Length: 288
Image (cartoon, rainbow, N blue to C red; front, side):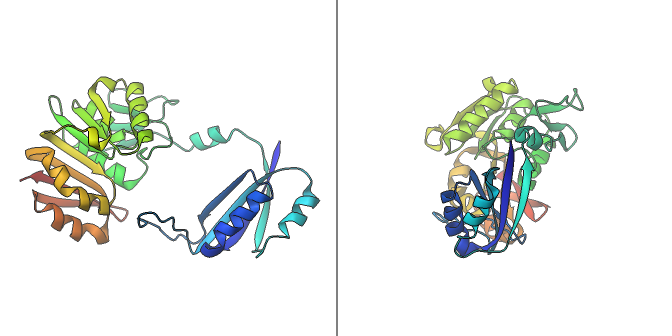
């Protein structure tokens, strides 16, 4: 089976209406993507921002080409567009081929489960792309993994992964010896964390819970790879979860947001320092 893909050069204001029209014409999938490398970092609550220059891609089953072309001409407004004919293929396999083993620091590797691990003696995390955030490819996750790699043996310690996503940081901490509480307000993330923990044979060391089910703790360390605004709101809560001199690691912070986050957490933590990668920051500190 073959497919026909139309790619429209749209504006953010027109994209939603254009998407609705294309679905009404029988598109099996409609995708919006950035047409001008314009970042949308942290949208306001209950908003779904799009890019000012947006590509709207619509996929149709290959059939009556003339009828489809005539239908496309009825779009109002009709932006400039390109047409591609795509051969059918195993799209999952194509996507998976792009996910390769990655090393963080000296010991930690994140590897897709279908490939042999590069270093059997290393701390290897088996993780496949999925719905929950976190495969190690984003700088914020990479910064946190590099921090964990430098902490040494965590045996006998209790850690918290707040905003666990796929569970990648919780699994890394568990493989380094810690008992971990993995926290997320998305049940899908908790399921992904549990499944990935089972795959990595550390499910007995990780407890995945909603925030309201997290007990009072005095943990030895806490990782929170979220975003700046939630981190600002969570500062008092995160501080209560750690014992004095416990390790704090925050990420998901843009360089321009560092001053506000540092000022907020300085009320509860000392020895705060930053590490940057590709415009993102990690903040490390010790509980006062």
